[in-house]
Amino acid sequence: MARTAGSHSDITGPRVREAALTLFARHGYAAVSMRQIAKEVGVQAGALYNYTPDKQSLLFDLMRGHMDDLMTARANEPTQGAPQDRLEAFTRFHIRFHLERPKAVFISYMELRNLTSENFATIEDLRRRYEGALESLLQAGRDAGHFHLADTKLTTLAIIAMLNGVNTWYRSGGRLSLPEVEAVYWDMVRKAVT
Image (tube, rainbow, N blue to C red):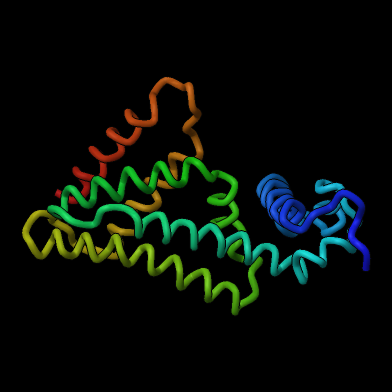
């Protein structure tokens, strides 16, 4: 099948993913058709299959890409120092990383139910690895006597849920700057563990 005039795989492929990300975040996965994605990109519906086997694969690729980017970025963050310093770094990292990707974060939480069981297991495993890194940090702080926690798993989930909440209300140029928001959230996280 010939490529549409003016279409280039290195340009169109990312445009397909961006269009799907935007449409899934705006309307929900179930409400979006491949035809709508094609229209948004400006290609024939059949041309999408040059870039993805189906809509499920597209959703999975978006979620997997988000988790891979998250894990790679986190791996490049400093992990040395006292537990409190490491927890502060995690808090600030999580807020910054996720604020730059509101659509991907929304889809990662709201569209899990639309993944096949195999794809769900893969994404869930990546999420557990990310959460596990925070839980290990909390356990190390508790074992060293720096943190006082009744349950490290529950505290891990509560911290991540609280940090993810920033995406729902923060707007650049608002009352608080991003560094101020990070400082307030770090103070809340610190108080939750000490």
